[in-house]
Amino acid sequence: MKILEVYKDVHPLVRGGIERYIHDLSSFLAEKGHDVEVLIAGDNSDAPDIEISGFKVRTTPCICRVMSNPICPELIYSLREIPADLVHFHVPLPSAVLSWLMTGRRTPYIVTYHSDIVRQAAFLPFYGPFLHRFLNRANAVITTSPVYVETSVFLSRLKNVSVIPIGSDLNRFKPSDSMKTGDYVLFVGRFRKYKGIHVLLKAWKHFPDRRLIMVGGGPLLREIQHAVSKDRLNIEIIHDPEDDRLVQLYQSAKCLVLPSTMRSEAFGIVQTEAMACGTPVISTSIPTGVPWVNEDGVSGIIVQPDNPDALADAIVRIDDSTLRNRLSLGALERARLLFDSPVLLSKIEILMREVISERNDG
Image (cartoon, rainbow, N blue to C red; front, side, top):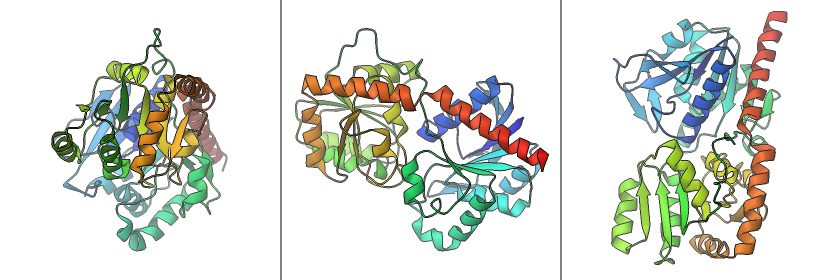
C-alpha cells in the first residue's frame, strides 16, 4: 500500500508523544513493505523533503501557527495531489480536516483521534459540524482508550470507532539490568499548561531535599526556571535528551509524575514508557485515558487533578519500598499485557488492509 500519514509534525524534527507515535507507526509500516509518506507543516517554505527511518517526510509551507494549528494555504493542493491508496489523519488538526473536505477527494481515509479540541474551544461552534462530517465519512476512526470514546462528544455517537492504544517498544523501554533505583522523581513531556506544571511546582515546595528531573521543553520553560530560582526548588531541567539517555532516566527514577489537569492529555504516552521500564506512575483522575493506562494500585497511584497536596502525599507514599516494588512489578506486567507497541501497530496495519479490501470489493 501507498500510505499518506498527515499531522503537523513528526519525530525527531519535533519531540512529542504524538510525533513519536507517528514516527514509530510510519517506520513499522515501511518495514512491512509499505510505501509511507508523512505530510507535515513546515515553517520554512524551502524545507526539503527528507527520509527518516525508512519513510519519506514531505513538508507543506506554513505561514503561521494559531494556537498550535498550522495555517497552510497549500495544504488543500497537497492533500488533493499526493498519490496514496490510503490517507491516515491524526487529529486534532483543524487545518487538515477543513482542507480534506474541500478537496472532494474520494481516497479511503482513517483517522486517529488523539484528543478533543480544548484550547480552541471557542472555535467549536464553527468547526464542530465539519469535524462531525469528517469523522462520519472516515472509513475508520481509531481512538486510544475506551474512556475517550465514552467521554468525547465527537466519538460517543460514531459507529466506525476502533480502540487501539498507543504502546511502547518493550525492547527499548525495559528495566535496567541493575534494577537500582535513583534518588529522583521524573517528569517527561512538553512544558504546557494542561500538563499540570503549576501543580507540580506547588507540590515541590514541600520537598526541599528531594530531586525532581523535568525532561522536555516548551512554552512554560521560563516560568519553570523562574520558579526554580525564586523558590529555590530542587529541580533539574533536561532539554530533549537522546533516546538512550531518556530510557536510563526512566529506569532509575523512583516514579514518573504526570499531573495533567485537562482533556488535552488524552492518553499520556510517557506512562507506558515508564511502566515498560518497571517505574511506577503517579497521574491524575482526569476523565480521559490517563487513569485507564495507569491503573490505580496496580501500576501506580491516581490522585485528584489540581491538588498539589495530594500529589505530594503520593510522592511520599512511593518511599515505601514494599509498595514501590509491588507497583513496579504491576507496571511492568501491565505494559507487557496491554502496551506492546508492535502488537498494537500490527492492529493498525490490519485495519488499513481491511479498509483497502472493502474499498476494492465495493
